[in-house]
Length: 371
Ligand SMILES: Nc1ncnc2c1ncn2[C@@H]1O[C@H](COP(=O)(O)OP(=O)(O)OP(=O)(O)O)[C@@H](O)[C@H]1O
Ligand SMILES: CC(=O)N[C@H]1[C@@H]2OC[C@@H](O2)[C@@H](O)[C@@H]1O[C@H](C)C(=O)O
Image: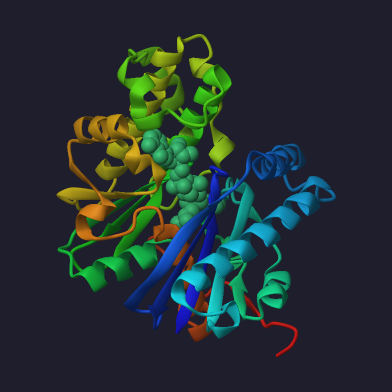
């Protein structure tokens, strides 16, 4: 199947779209991919929906801000698919399927016996109608309903990538997005995965608050700062870090309070070391230690952060590009791959990834109105 995958991550920087040929097991061809960045106006509308979601917390009517965000999501996602198809020399209606993640605005992991809740904005049926192509969407709901974490879902794609590239096992794959997530493909091809802790999300929010910039580009600010162990200890006291097994995070599960009194450089250094140390803690929880970590997601471009991870986690770190992967597109590719698995009735989440009791199917398929 030729499938376009779409991902709009928690950093709200843009829609990633990648086209893949896949049978839901292996990747037979990597088609074109791109990021359709959000304008500052679009980003503000999405940020408003996230803010409203944090006030809503799954209680009562959904905030009105969701509807406005949905319009932005539909338009920008459709644009991203059109642009990728143009690069591929086809029309959206020529694709076999589109894998549409939507925009996570709130994610609540299961706790104290209560199931998790997760909300991705975006209307799969509307996208199918706009593009004239079937759309697989809503990938996380079935998992949380079955008692899973609802995240991370990319691990089964990480394994397919590793298999397609013939990489040695055990292999560690780290995504540095708003939140970090780690996948281990163990010696037998089994999967263990979970969210590691805050990654770019906290650093971005801190830098934006202090400087108005969107990120600590290449970790320049962090490189000039001093780590404050007290602030670090406050963050590391969070229950997430002492938990074993499947676990997931919302980008906003951590606040900037512990670094509020620090200078900009010291705060950036402390938050970057926090990300690095929590990757180290995550590696220590794995049943097998990989020799190296392949890093994808925007955070792999933060050279200071990668160097800190090498030291704090005592592991060799490579950018995904070192093995020919497209570090900025892996999540979009993952949702193309997951769409294929949804269509074929193959599981997308596993006991080792989201903590579900058995491998579980997920996602729904919307057919375009004119079919
Ligand atoms: N040159 C760079 N230096 C430092 N950080 C960078 C650089 N380029 C990108 N980033 C970081 O990467 C982030 C975007 O990463 P990415 O697109 O992987 O996140 P996302 O997909 O939104 O997150 P998630 O995986 O949580 O959904 C930016 O917000 C920024 O923090
Ligand atoms: C609920 C949600 O959207 N989680 C995202 C987020 O971004 C990174 C990390 O937190 C990961 O758990 C997940 O995304 C990737 C694509 C995943 O599900 O594998």
